[in-house]
Image (cartoon, rainbow, N blue to C red; front, side, top):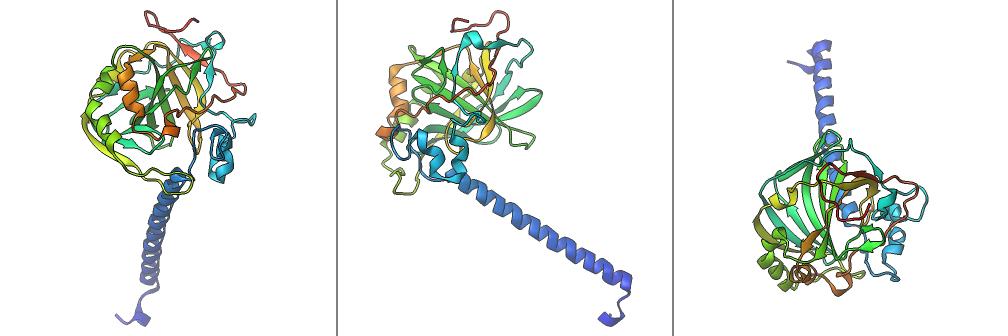
Length: 305
């Protein structure tokens, strides 16, 4: 048909279809760009855990505008970790029982020079908080513990990071504190892989270079030992404990201390740079926040309340 003879209604429909096609392409391109920006934010400039250094914890917020939330001294901030005073925690029996359902999952051990983490593939399980399902994404160890209880710091803290399955971006973290004692049944299965990670000679980043991670395929990791009946825990509103220190994180610090052997503790620090084997951020001001406490009948609490 001669273009000059196309009826006005048909021409309008064609124009609308073309506009919709262009809009779809634009949205797809925008989504791709957004993902790149988020990935860049996660990388960010290098930071350290050594106090008194230019890139140390007290100076994180100066390293980049992306890290502005790390200024925990500001009265409006809700930063983590904190020192939990048990006598000030408010009992709240209607909190969630932290019901978890974890499955065996294909895992990768990751060493970025400052932390040892486990990245989990697929859908390894969930925890329900406030009626919302949060999917388990990764595990990360800190030595010593980042959270204090009544002013006491423990040798190890395992942080289990969950993200809302609704796509809202909400994050919930379950923190488990450890004392030195019997071997931990979860770490036992990682013994050979942690040794392999320690042998990796990859160059980690420092303030003058680019990040490079060491990765070791850990195979199938069984998570059941991490879903034992939780019992008591402390809850408060906080943030990520490393840059960009994003806030809005629902923290749940378990009230029962678990045990880890000294050998296992050493295996979790051996792959790290010497300056990062102490990778706990200093505690942050409470700034008026309320810490609540859930303690169901017959549960075990390792602290004096």
